[in-house]
Length: 310
Image 1 (cartoon, rainbow, N blue to C red):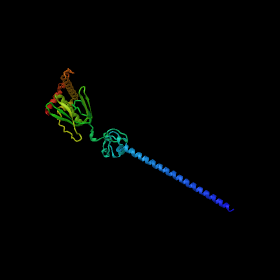
Image 2: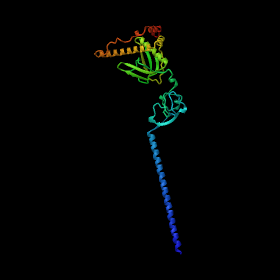
Image 3: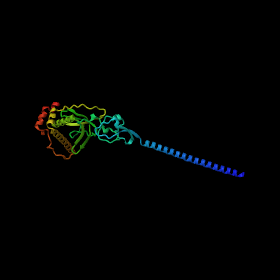
């Protein structure tokens, strides 16, 4: 009777110790698992952070500005239309706008979609492109051999008596083309109505006065050099002639192109003769001369002749 309760107490103590051991082991296991998980997560975060830092170092980003909504050609950019964005520095356009103040108030050159990066080539000032601005093409100018696209030039006219005048100043070459087979140079640039008339007058003058040359002179440092003062005195008689017969300009262009062709053939023949070889081109007797202009045109020009301006 005395031993039985003692045996129960021993059994209960064993069970209590076993339960306590199970609880301690379970708590330790749960703590280990939780701690191991946290360590694994911290290790993952550290690896991710290092990977991001390495990517940023290898792929630096820069701040640019984009449009927040679709914009149509001719619309003016406002503050609300511009938002900052970061992109890979190697993908940023060379003329990307990095200061929003340089874009506000500018006019969109062509229709663009939202999130398009704002660049200088996408915009222009209102005063840069007046309503009478046109892309003009000329094939009667003597161009420098090293002239390149986007350079700035003065267009000058030199008369046979040595007088030289500036017709147009600081015009940017939009495009140019050289055809070596006939020494024909074609140049394109933007010009307003007044400049178009000045060029027309100079072309007609050059076609009428034998030996007159229209040529281009490039700027060395257009960013710091001021625009030259135009000195060519527009011939009022020629202007009147142009108004009465617009086709006179085409006649003048044909005359100047014919002269350039004659000079080209003459130079080639001289080079061949100097080398002891026969001429390449026969004598050209079909060249257009100033006498081909109608007599009424000559009378008009005489009223205010080129010599009066010289």
